[in-house]
Image (tube, rainbow, N blue to C red; front, side, top):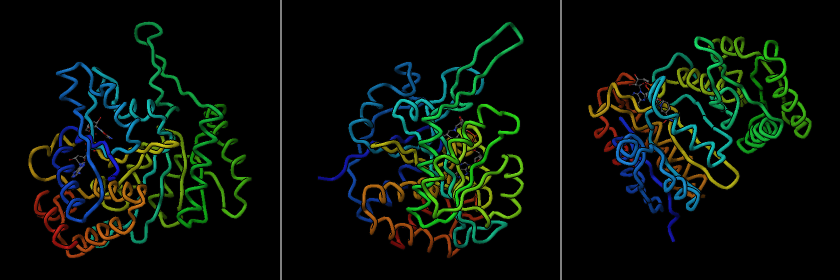
Length: 331
Ligand code: NAI
């Protein structure tokens, strides 16, 4: 029986890039039985909930999801659907591999960094309140179990993909308790991996080093908020948000999604780059054990980009549909 996967097309450019990915996976012969419940801006209006419980239940049942970007209103309205999804399903590890792609213009060569971001707590706990008008508190929650499991995930993942070095990024010089706890957990876990090099960097200095010598980094691990920023920074090292995939992984459930958002500025214009979501789907196929199909899709994608067929965000002139057909032709 084909594995069931919950597909959330998402908002903005989401439906067009998920269509593209579904088309490419079908053409490649991926063995997936999609289940597509409604979620996002549509259900926020019709059901008063951008992430209805039935969607969470569907993912709990299938244990695998592929998700387009979902819009979160700024400063008002409902909280982030993405953050809620990760918390409700306890998808504690966000995995964002960033690597130089053939033909994709960027300032660097040979970048191959995996960003591991804690997904359930930190400054993204969303616990905020007004103390008195004009004064708000936003709490950063850090716990030993969550810090320990994300650091262990980073070391395990480094071993799995044949890397030699794991670096923790933090601000323990200022947030001595919160980030100090993260760092203590990191070095405690590191003791179990003597074969891997471990080190740490203060987050601001790390950002400078990432843009000066990205080739010196392999696997980096950090709390939620830093991970959000650093993964966008890293995607800028290899051509931008249009090419950076991601996965949210828990103990027995995983939801795969691009790092980018719903790009309302180009929604409906056939301009969106499906590469990031396609690479997320490739990660999903690997997770499902369909490595041969995953490799074939990746090879076709790299061939397409290598031949200079690209969407506008990468300096090319192909629309979403032309790009998709070019990948299908090269499968
Ligand atoms: P964004 O990632 O949607 O867009 C930033 C810039 O990158 C825009 O200029 C956009 O056109 C471009 N871009 C992004 N993806 C692209 C693609 N595949 N192809 C070509 N160009 C692309 O970030 P923004 O504008 O900050 O957020 C828009 C909405 O998306 C917000 O509501 C935000 O909350 C949501 N969002 C959702 C995420 C998710 O579902 N995981 C992640 C990030 C943001």
